[in-house]
Image 1 (cartoon, helix red, strand yellow):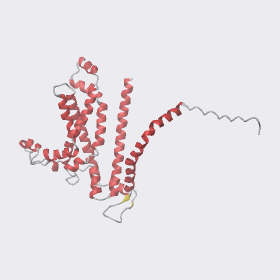
Image 2 (tube, rainbow, N blue to C red):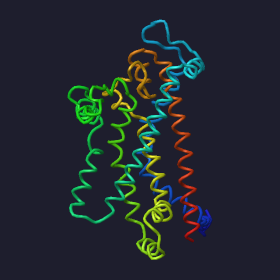
Image 3 (cartoon, rainbow, N blue to C red):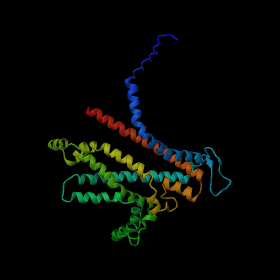
Image 4 (spheres, rainbow, N blue to C red):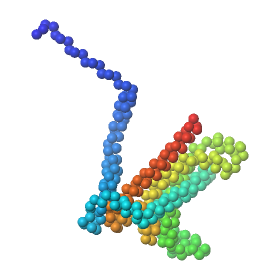
Length: 316
């Protein structure tokens, strides 16, 4: 051995990380705690949807033990040409659009009233919010038995002097009955959104309009309504997403009847699954409904985002 010990070789210095790499590492460190929640969400939501797609490609009826064969897109072709499915889709559009638009109009009116100061405003606001806090099943039973009953209903009692006291509203006008119950339930939600928009409105703008001589209608159409546009769009979007999935109100009030006159898509899928036992066709209906809902929600979100960005650019 040499008397002189060899010096250990020096390791090359680690290259310094760029700011972009540091930001990426910091972002991963922030997202890592959310990974279990993301995995749980995927397992709960996406795996059932994948199984639904799988079932929609098979001809499977529980009443036929020999079914369960691969059918390809036959279920989708049948569903898209099914008159009852198209009728349920039309009912879904009518119920959703009517409920959301009428609820928004009522909500705007109530919010305009509650935006003013008067004695007992807190109590009135609490009472107006109450219908939204009642569970949908109780709401449907309340309207079916207490309001629309042809013998003991309050609506028949009020309309008796006009010759409409013996009208069976649920049987003769099922869609109108369902929409009425839904409007009563969702108007407080729209009212809260619009009221939040009214309370965020600058008083300086209102006072400037009053000084310029604008009347109440001009103030509402030219000042208040443009300010409430984002809140109205958000309420319409959220209301549409929730109302399009209405099931309990129809189930408790009309059972989709008479026949399928008041069936919407969720209730008709339930009928095909649990009454018709056709798993393949009902799964195909579910996939079509999900795709349609995603398309509509995406377009609505883009519209709201563009409106928000244009408002931000106008302010800047």
